[in-house]
Image 1 (cartoon, rainbow, N blue to C red):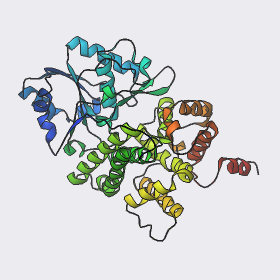
Image 2: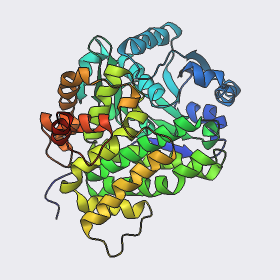
Image 3: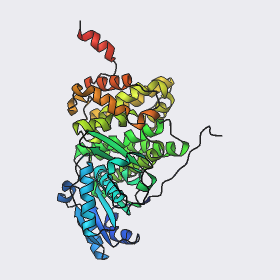
Image 4: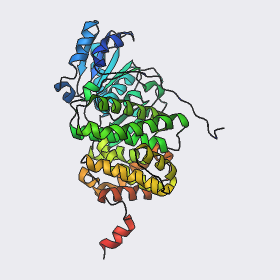
Length: 402
């Protein structure tokens, strides 16, 4: 019998298949929607990824407007401008087309269209009381898994802080996974979003709040990412690997909506808020350093991850096998030209006190597998800044004065 209670809740309907986005209109109309606001960014619109979706809406007489002001690390201001735009056009649903930023923005707009006040007032868990407008999500990257999660991330520009709004009401009503929409992704975005999905799966699997259901989804996601990410990166046009990555990203999203995450996300959200670093690349660069920190607390789980990533751990101790997982993550980053330190991402240690304070504010720290104090966050950031997994911060300071 389990020593803790847990519940599993994932109400999002998922439709997956090559070209299925061209049936968006039919699927949306089943929700009783008559006028939808498409939430996207200018890059997605310029790439003509909306063409088939727009046609499908017109074919079934669903009116639409397009709000394309989404930026990386979307701000509260962008969300509230979107709410005004939605009300002006009397839309009765939101349709996100894009990466995690577009989906997060759509969730925020849908929630604030039916709830009073400002979205920054809803930071935390369970503060949204009124049902949002229907949310439909069509991801064009295989990374965030936001199409099946109960959260949205919002940047407070005044404080340079990324906060989480979490509510069961934020699960999208419908997710449409079409690998055809990911075929023209630049390599660097394929890499960053793919490693973002892997981070979600690993942190979910090792979270203190994990349960057998979330861990099953997380482990399947790890396995599928290990088998498909590099092929998506190096081949690009392979539909099978692209579809498998979309499914893996979705599964990782399902997993962490049950279990939350850990120190990688606590720190990466802070880096995004202060330095406007894209979320996926921040996660990818931080992941090996947080895994190294967590190793003493979850070596057995890292062994599972190494095996899921295709590593032969026969004859190795649990610790040696666990280290294979960290080595594999580093190898994946290297093969896809992801920086092996956060200095190259534009991080400055001049902001270190704020980075530590804001990271510790995240609820993800509390469920990280290893007990974490502010000094630990500082050490992780400093080690990741210099890109040296082996040399401790204390040793580096001693060496620098000799």
